[in-house]
Length: 486
Image 1 (tube, rainbow, N blue to C red):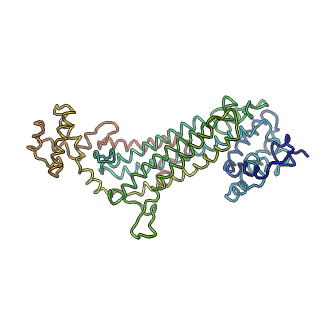
Image 2 (cartoon, helix red, strand yellow; image 1 turned 90 degrees about the horizontal axis):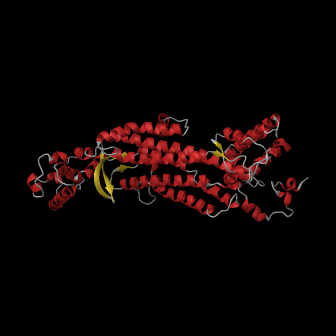
Image 3 (tube, rainbow, N blue to C red; image 1 turned 30 degrees about the vertical axis):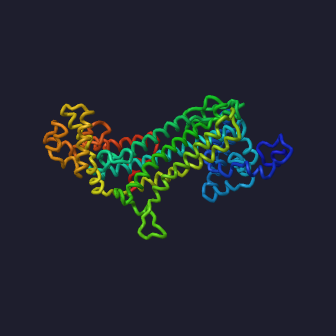
């Protein structure tokens, strides 16, 4: 019996001394790459097909191997089964685990599967399959959140709120317009992730350890079976590329960043000082000390998650920095940061349900939108229409605001005589030009908060989300996602 068979290692023929026991346990990746079992089985089946086409395996052997691989997948599909994979006593990694289980099931034929293959290409393939699947889940989650935002925008109708710059009240906007701003972020995130998925969707199988397979494998066969667009073009790059993990984590950082901005605004708006938002009790908690409290735990956790995502991206950046070509063991450390982001699809499902459950204190928001001279720019625009250069119009309205502040009134409470001390251009039509409705509707441009523009944006939003789902190959429709989030 060979040394490899005695030790159970995949590489031990050249070695005579056993590994240091502590080092052996420390360097094993099965404790985290067990998550790649499904991907390893799929890639192994595709490799078996390529070996069959190259006449390394007979058709009967290929059928037996593929059946055994499917059996392993079924055996360890449950949570208890996954725990057995993770806690396996001798497997170094997920590739070794599958090979050991194949040998248990079908004997020496199981050892034949590694012909013409290296673990370097296996892990590169498995990780691409994993990240691709995660991206699909995240995009579906982003679509669910976007749809919840759109549904809230529908319900909000013409409800108004203040917008803010520098955290100071700026101009009135429709609540729907504010909600759709976050929908835009969600759709940008989906687009970034779809772009990442397109770039990673090339198959490394057949790249060997570094220089390419030593057998005449038809790489297109494995690529097509696994749903890749094509084989990778360079074996050195294919086995050492982890750009897709970094790009994925960077895109997820932006997802987390946008969720954090949303969470921060909701957290502020739910305070008594703002009083714009009523937090849904199903997503809030109380205080163990203060009986009156309703705390925004979901939004506070959302704010925090971006740190974990950005930390994962930074970790992979530093792991890849300065690595020579091609594969290095350092790359094993890129896996855990990728796996650490697996909470994102669930987080998006939760935030979609949370968003759908939010209630707005419309009267409080409307009142806030009509106090503090938020119609000042509309007032300046009125003067522009009277032929006043904007810089002069800005100054005239600024003087009017200062005068109104001293009197403790709003612009529309100044008399025409008081206004005309700052400019003869003021007329009776000034008051209709600075009503709340007029202030909204003067922003009648694409992307503006004019009511007709926002209504049109709402009507167009569901179609845009449906396009994202279709491009993602999602089995869920907009209607199904809406029902699931209700």
